[in-house]
Image 1 (tube, rainbow, N blue to C red):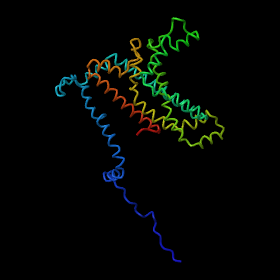
Image 2: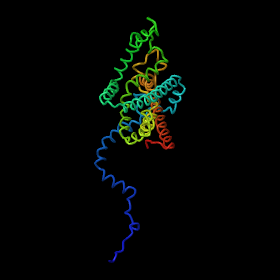
Image 3: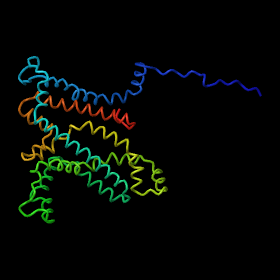
Image 4: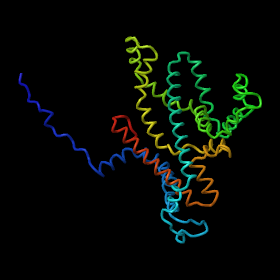
Length: 324
């Protein structure tokens, strides 16, 4: 039987992939439905996030609302110089970084710990009850949450009553927690954890469902107990999610919040409760000094942008997961 000659597939030239604008146009046509679906979001992003950036020019002016834009007096970096020479701004910057750092550390540690513990619960009913109870505070507004915290920490609140019962304080010497400035950061951190720890566990619990069960079985066969399985299987399995969320949260280090500080702050703890957002409201917008408020907001945005890219680049250099 005669054998027919065969052609080597290695010599067959592969079709060339379109390059440049032609390839982009082909992909655009193929995915036109997705592109059309994203148009409203892109329009919203451009109108409400990018167009207002022209307002940053106010930071370089002695802005007066009654005057036309072309009639404004340009002062250069005077407002930025005033910010960095103002003791109040240095103080609120310290408070912002401290509260953001506390919130970042406590938020990550408590959320990951709770997620690990919930992942080990075998009774579904009990697990659902714990999840529901821990999720509920997230859906309470900070107005209600601050009222609960104030009532709990008041001289006749449950904390002081417990201290009285245990004998740590005497009757008539109850602690005014929100009146002691040094206590504010701890109160803010504890309140933030109570309100958001359950909600923050959702991402980690979802990531844990993607871990191959065979890894747990292999670890159990090797004699690993629950603690070792959490340490050597679960934590490495959700490590990429932890790194990505950490990078995103580092970008928000100057976003320590507004509502809890505004609602829980008072004249006695003002030196530790005021942050950048309250500074902008109190010394900028409330006093009609819009240029100063824009300068402070612009500083916060630029620093957040730098922190985000620095954290992402550091993760890239260490070979970890990153945003881009």
